[in-house]
Length: 516
Image (cartoon, rainbow, N blue to C red; front, side):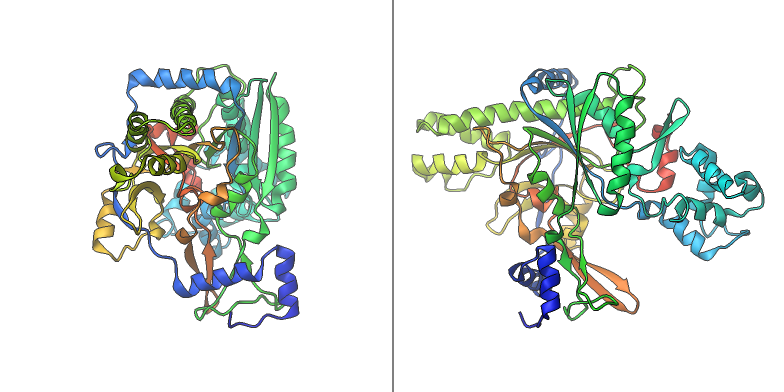
């Protein structure tokens, strides 16, 4: 490493748990850059990359899951540490331009006009009105006078409601019985519907930011008593500081803050692999905090479609896992050629594991060792929805340096979009990743996998941000459901659009799915 660090720098890194070896790897990544993922083709229903479940099989897999889960430990894992700043990006920009009374602004900020025109429909409206009232302001008066900037400031400002800096989990998304509740309640309700353990308990794990942990704890304490005859075991964790990455300038020199301390930035949601690795459960459901729909926890209603599909995905996982575990036990007994061929066909056809071209010429022991190593891995079944133009990742067949194909969830920033052929593959994608995963984290002997062994460190990426007149560069670790699960057994399943109702902007809460 060519850069010299002071004793104070080393002390700072030590406090974060970042070693000099880890820092050297980060600098090498800046110098060499991460190689782009090489797409072979989009994973589709037609080419076998995505499984389409027939109507007659939905109930089968759902029932299978309900039967088998009684003997398993279940956990719902929800990344919830990110701030909602992007959700209010247009409102924040509007309030930085306009102050007080606003005229002739509608064409410049059409999304803000939509927000203002529909303000009473938002679940947080009553709190906003009350907050302004507590400061001697009548929200209706400010609406009448076109003083929208003040209203926005009361919603986003840290001195008031602070929605511009809070995590989405703590924002009021929906109302039940005339009472507004934060988005986190939906995950309690979902968990009670499909993630109940044999003893009746539901295990939920939220990743949170340190500055909001106290408010999370208060919110969770308020929600638990709302559910009768249900025991929630809720755990929280924070992103590990040793996963932070150093910020550098255009010349890869470390950047410092006004106090002369090195600037380290969070390593993205890929850093949460460390948190997931510490969770103890047989089956883990992973879902984004903002992908929720209204589901009244105080009414006994049939399972909505998103819940049914969670059970379907879970049933598919447990079905494949049962076969995989059985075959692994057979592989431990020195099986004959016929059984090895059967296992190889299952690995190739059901788990999409690429067999080497010379597999047929390998010795029996070599075939056994290969199949054992490929089958004995964490498994994930991922719901995929039809592509509706949403930004984000999708399912693809990816080709490695040896020409082997595997199913991967790939983000657009992992792709060389200047390559015409790669862009063509990207544009041919039929499905989108809604982050709807069911994961098996234990091996066939019941031992937890060390998930850190199944990630591809070369699938991180470098981000660029402006800091005054300078460019700040930092790294993000391989995404939690991207490179961090690169060497998992992966199965993609087509799920209906009703399972995907994200809230990426505040106006998404005006969609009919969120107002029902």
